[in-house]
Image 1 (cartoon, protein in one colour):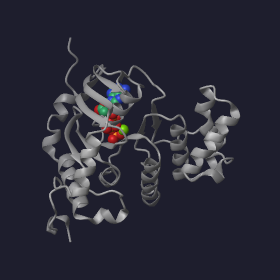
Image 2: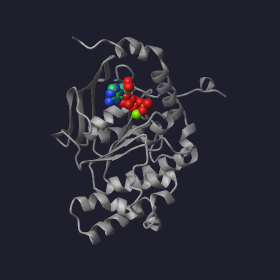
Image 3: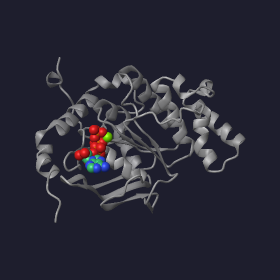
Image 4: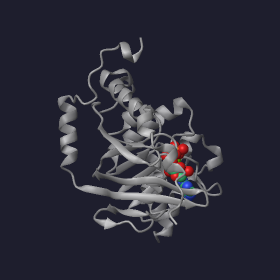
Length: 295
Ligand SMILES: Nc1ncnc2c1ncn2[C@@H]1O[C@H](COP(=O)(O)OP(=O)(O)OP(=O)(O)O)[C@@H](O)[C@H]1O
Ligand SMILES: [Mg+2]
C-alpha cells in the first residue's frame, strides 16, 4: 500500500508525550543561536548565495537536524558554526559568546573518516586531551572511558585500518566527546556507511546522546534518519539556502526502529518530501546561482 492510501495523522498533531517533551525543551537555556546568517561565495563566474539570512536557536540537550537538497548549504552552515569559515553577514552565538573561530565548545564529526591512521584508537581519542596539556595517564583513562561508552574498549590498541566504517565513526564520536564540547556538530556522519550499519549507528548515537550532557546539530539528507534522531528538523531550501520550515518531530521517545512505520513518522516523512522535492521551494535556483558579482 502506498503512503497516499494510508490514513495518516497530520504531522502537526502531537501526542501528550510529544507535547510535554517539546514544551520542556523550549524552557531550557539556549545553547546556540544563528541570526541573519548569510554566506556568499564570489567567483569569476558570479556570486553564489549559499546561505541567506538563516535564523534559529538550539536548546540545551536538544537533538536538531538540518536537511535539504544537495547544494542547499548544509555543509556551509556547519562549517560556519564550527568556526572553520566566516559569514558574509549575521552572527552565531554559543553559550552567549559570539563564534569567531574554532573552539573546544564545539566538537565535529565529518562524513569522511578523519582518524589519524598512524595512531591507535586509544591515541586518536587521547590526541585532543594531550594537546590541551592533560597528563598521559589521565588522558589514557579518559580515552578508555569514552571508548567504553561507544562500545569499543576492546579495540583501544587497534589501528584505524583494522576497523569497519561504523567503528571508525564511533571512534570519531568518542574523540569529539572526549574534549567535552557543549555541542556536537555532525555533517552526514553515517553517509558513507551501508544501510544496516547506518541503522545501528543511529540507534547507537541515540544511546550516547542519552548518556551524555550534549546538544547535537546533525546534518543529513536522509529524511528517515532526521526523523528518527531529532527533536526538531530545520528544512533548508536551495539557491539561496534558507529555512523553509522548522518541524517539531511528532514521534515519541524513546525511539525504536518499529516507529519507521508509524503514522506520525510517515506523515512527517511525507511533509519533508513535499518540502524538499517541491519545485516551488527551489524556483529561484538558476537565477540566484549565476547572478553576476556586483561591480
Ligand atoms: N568554497 C566555496 N566556493 C564557492 N562555492 C562554494 C564553496 N563552498 C560551497 N559553495 C557553494 O555553496 C553551495 C552550498 O554548498 P554546500 O557544500 O554547503 O551544500 P550541501 O547542502 O552541503 O550539499 P551536499 O548535500 O551535496 O553535501 C553550493 O552551491 C556550493 O557549490
Ligand atoms: Mg554537504
